[in-house]
Amino acid sequence: MAVYSTNEFKNGLKVMLEGDPCSILENEYVKPGKGQAFNRVKFRNLKTGRVWERTFKSGDQLPGADVLEAEMEYLYCDGEFYHFMKTDGSFEQVAASEDLVSDAKDWLKEQDKFQVTLWNDQPISVTAPNFVELQVTVCEPGIKGDTATGATKPATLTTGATVRVPLFVNEGDVLRIDTRTREYMSRVK
Amino acid sequence: MLTAIRRFFECRGVIEVQTPLLMPCTVTEPMIDSIEVPGYGWLQVSPEYPMKRLLAAGSGAIYQLGPVFRDGERGRWHNPEFTLLEWYRPGFDDRALMAELADLVNELLGTVDYHDQAYGALVPATLEGDAADLAYADACSRLSGRVFVTHFPKSQASLAQLHADGETAARFELIVDGIEIANGYLETGNPDELLARFEADNRRRRTLGKRELVIDQEFLSAMAAGIPKVSGVAVGVDRLFMLQQRLAHMDAALTFRI
Figure (cartoon, each protein chain N blue to C red):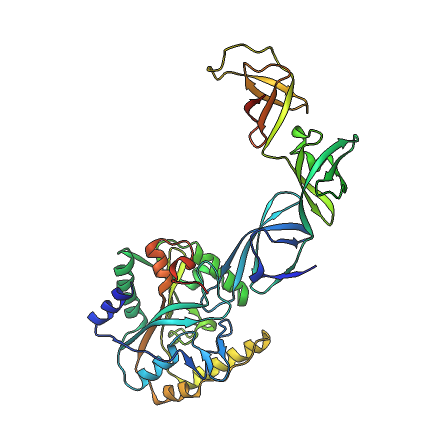
């Protein structure tokens, strides 16, 4: 694997820091006129999502991390692992443990595509697309014509997730949901 | 901004000079890397040595405004080529020059109050070397307003005279909103002391695995011939321009990027 010096640190570069794969978010060059030059670097730890800040002497090096973002199709859950398949025609599959899919779990529908981060070919995180379309399995019957009050009720989706929806929504409707805010966007015909 | 600077010095009777950018020797400062021009020498990191040779020749008060070069310096507040303003005031001590620098900055950025801060109040005395540099950079970045940092330790005297205490140097830096804008000294003209500092620089360069540099004998012989009591200061003009125009990155202050 390549080794990168502080002057090669660019936003998005994947490097190993203290044993974890990280993505560089920010790299600021700091140098007192007559003093040692430093790089103040912000990283996102790709395993935990936490932001780390570290200062290096300019010229210090970090090893690159073999990290790949791949679009993968969700196949099924075997009770313990969640299985995904690459969409690049290779049909390669990976199995992600429950803690890796926790953020995406509410939106996991078979054949939907997810962003999977692979480190040394092993999944380290699964991100849902910003919008998903899911069917309502359980909710109170719709109230016709109530499109203006802004009142909401809970609805359970095929994935088991519960979201707030407008009163006119019926069981069996397919809804478009923003996964970042869990908000109802629209009905899908 | 360039016109305003030239007008400022014209009004005060300081003469503009132009010394070569390309010279056979360069500074020995361990943490400043010069760009070598094979067959000729080095692009200058500041016009300090040739300007002091002019002072030794009796030039009187002089200023220079132009590009300088520092290898590897690139970032939000750095570019390998940048514009430096440097001036020397025979008869001024460091305090008098700080006051004149404040006048200039007031003219360019608007008038505000200045505060003094001793280096020792920013960096714990127990720190030295890189740890001290890092602590200093962090402390400066947290300073708001316009602050003169004074009383640098002897180890960072560079080309400044020492105060009577023998421990701190008559060196100052001006920090504006956390950014280093200027560095000045009440200059030492003692050639033996300068030679000792240059040799110490070269020893430090050796321990850092950097190339040792030829000591500028013409500069030292000019100092031996004698310079008047003089204070000098160097100002980062691109940074001043960034602050004046509220630019977020040096690239926006340059006509073209390298």
